[in-house]
Length: 70
Image (cartoon, rainbow, N blue to C red; front, side, top):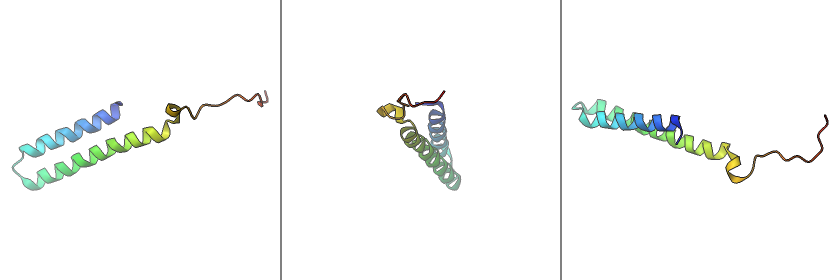
């Protein structure tokens, strides 16, 4: 898991923990919404990693066909 994803998930967890301890329901609701957004961003990072890292599937490597001009 990369550092950015871990940080986003940690922020989401903290927001939820604080929200659960608040007596002010509106503030707690805003914190839960922030937590949801952090988690969604972490999920999007996963999606971007899969689509932008074609090397995992054996694609994206340059082949040397001998057609280069030096």
